[in-house]
Length: 471
Image (cartoon, rainbow, N blue to C red; front, side, top):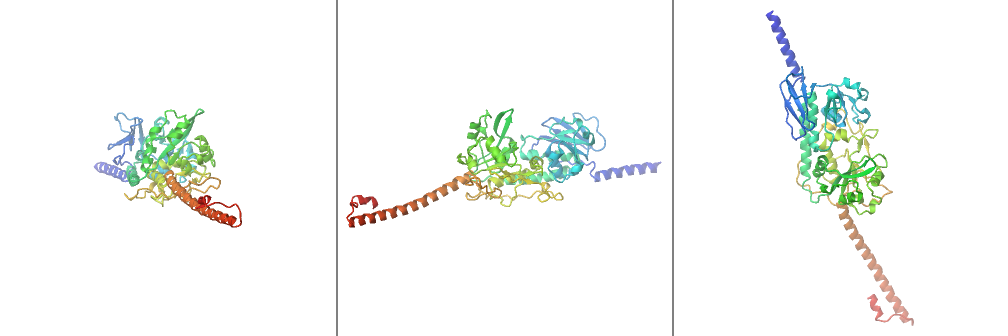
């Protein structure tokens, strides 16, 4: 009897140790680098994720649900193996963590842009499919009853705050250490590039803007949310968002508020694909942009974040961009200060200044599922020598030559255009002056010769007093 009891206790210990070794029930304590809007509390039998924004507490356990724990709104057994998503950022987090196979249902499967997902396994997240998933990541903590878990979808958080929610998602897979390591690399790269751009001598003006139709009433907005403001500041740009309008329906005031911009980044919902540049000019009331005298219109520095898309045209930015703020920042820097890292390949920034829309469909040529760039961070080298791109440097790498448009300002910022325009204008003035002087002297000489000839042949000629005109 003693032998049986000893054998049983030894077996239980071995199984327990095996479970810990496999990571089935290991709770790794990690710290948060920002104030992302959630906390993680670790206990030996469970962990508590508190969404401090929505004021919801989620309890996560491995074996059996703990009893006597107060204040927990929902319990989940972890690690989970089947996940539903109603927000694209959740798919991006799963991809970056290496848990793409856990995604089995989505609110709109056709709107997911990750080419590495097995489309045959992803079902529509209707009421029947909810029963087959263990957790649903949503924008609303109450969307799917006890299975729904909220993720942030607005832009009130800074880029790093929003990206740190990868640790929140990782907790459902007991994968906190991996998420902590990845986020630290992302944060280091983001902060490094940010610091490198803070010595720009001539800071450009840039605005993030949006047009909306509110029940037939136009609305023009300068976006000053934390997410957008942080990215523009990190790229070395400045602006006066205090000009944000009380009356967003006033087009004239809006145009006056952004007329000092060298760049604008637009997030309007444009639908006329292939003609979105024309649609944009129309919505914002610019009927003759090349004669407007506005810097960003003359240089056509109008940008968006939907260059990377699915084959059906769905933007990848909400899915992958929010996960990698360091790459988004590099994209914006490459637009505003193109000489900072000439080798950077833009992923999301799309030039809308011309008639062509060079969107890129995500495929095996630009995304390797076996070695995805979303989970690979290139280290940034700190530098203090960068003071801005040279005035004569043009960023034409992704600006096609539109033969039907005036390209006088294409490829350079407004501040560059002003300098270059002044130099070119002065040069033209000097050349015209030289040419004019040449023809003037030639005319003077011919007139004098003609006058002398007329005098020699008894013509009327000119007197010496009049001849001073040609001296």
